[in-house]
Image 1 (spheres, rainbow, N blue to C red):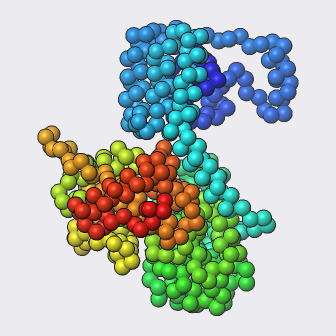
Image 2 (cartoon, rainbow, N blue to C red):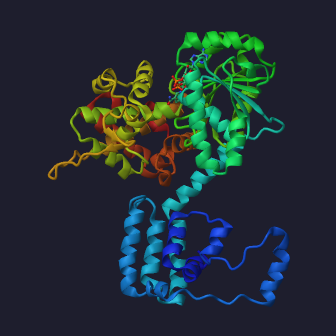
Length: 528
Ligand code: NAI
């Protein structure tokens, strides 16, 4: 806005200008100078003098090279616009995110006439900013700020983290904490786990930190500690060993006497109620759940799980710790599946049921992507690992109306666990699923999307009734940041209000007549 689209394109031409604006990517000062977006770059201490010189001797307006000016010819413009649209449409849809498309339209139709383009830009920005998508994205931003606010705690500055269990989760949690500047000791009973964790950490640091000096410093902060020497110094201990109550209890009994009195004890369990674990502790009030998501470096949310005995102080410290390591804390109760897995699982299971009914994988996934999910449910299940999905589904099926489809069990029995074994529902080639084309005359049933999404929404409503999170805003925040649920929709609860709770309740009733009890609307729809 404010004429920025016009001036940016005048300065750097359509290729670089559009690339910047359509991706929203930031440029370093050096890069901005190189493409001609800015005239000078000086160290901060010279800023005042440089500004004075700029005013006294204004830099000459550099004009674009001739070939870049040609790109503004109407014929070339409409051809280029098609190219831009093709690129944008690979990432987002016009119906979901209209802004990049509006930007291309503006350039295509008005780039030849500066005054007109300035006017049209103002009109276009006004339309976008008052539109649903922008309003919902502002809401998502506010939700993010709200979660960050939950992590505010004066005077609490954990410096040393001790992680026990260096597998998929523990190894990556340790690496992430060291990346964020904390000193970390990583304990595992197996040398191999520690070696693999360090290797993954190195790859992460290389990608994120780039400079050798910074990579080495991060590696120095991450110390393998097979004997658990770090326990006595730790401000917080994070347990991420096998998902087994007895083994975890035994570990807690062993470590508690070694810890400082104020050390926070956290578990990354995804399914064991905290009350069952805290039995093993003499001070159960300091046990809290820190439920990270896989892959740790990509997922911004951490569920802060409080059991009946968890003290408020422990809960606050855990939230503050999440914030220290640049993660968003979401307080949840210690109930099966907490919030995110509980809401996600019925949706995944419904998708697997559709596979069982013979719907092509690609159609199911595309249907969810069309709704605005970042990835289809079948690809997601393959990525998380079908063994993990099965174990979470089995645990949740003891508490919720979830029937584990046979095909999921069969896949696990055949060791087709998804991406990690190269085959799950999809076959994987170089880490990517091979999506077979669907027959040309195939028409999918019309209620696919409803079947998947309505189960997710229904469970979300049930979570609110059970008080898993305090309110609808927190539920929306959790599901957006924990699952990537269509951010332009502002979260499931916001979506329900947008479409009308009554109407959706009716839709669920219809589905339950057709497909059975699992679609029965939760009792609290009427109170929404
Ligand atoms: P994993 O099997 O990859 O790693 C477990 C590690 O703990 C292994 O390296 C093992 O050698 C070590 N270990 C077991 N007992 C130990 C002991 N007594 N002392 C020291 N080390 C010990 O398991 P994963 O997937 O990392 O899961 C760990 C925890 O995180 C579980 O509670 C799981 O429910 C939870 N979780 C897992 C997620 C996932 O996507 N895998 C997501 C969120 C939570």
